[in-house]
Image (cartoon, rainbow, N blue to C red; front, side):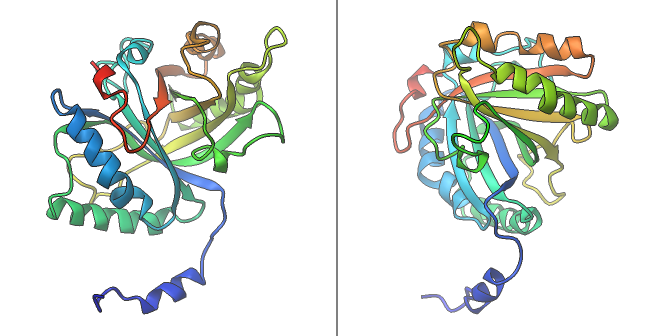
Length: 284
């Protein structure tokens, strides 16, 4: 075993600092493999990067990959999105929870490990980061109150679908108003039963993006909308296509009506099947 791993420090580090289960932060990364590289990208991410570039790092404690087949991509809106150009770009998204209060420690490690992975030829270059950001958790709204999984279970519970919604306010003060409206009025209304039938989403987790460090990898662009953006993750108990028209096709209308912001992306996904190439032939 190498003698330069500084193993004696690990016990010291474990004895200090926050170590709760709350997802205080998230890494949300939506990526588009270049045409012709779909299978190779999927194998690299599934077999190596999901682990070496995320799950093996300190303070990331849950993760899940999701995919948008072509028919799911075509459900996205608005057509002129400030997040994805074209709006169909970004057929894979990965979501990770980071322990509350451990963002700075995690960032030091992730910058270091990604530099090492790049140096060792373990970074797949034929892909584009469409929407990659570390984000701080702001709120979670539940359909069933105290019953059911909590947000810290969300990436391990077998949810059948994910809808990613990105909403921009006009500025920081307006974002605070937007967040309160979402938390207190809009999301509870969206999660309420309709005609005696439960809503397809069991919870919605709301995050705000944080800037990437200056020494980030050059292939990841700086985060946009740090002062005015909110990212909503809708966790669904069914395939998003099943009730898309009734529950998700017009999420932008209520936001516009509120006068508090504008929707820049609504994008449905289904979970990947780890260790397989399922859905790769349905991306184009």
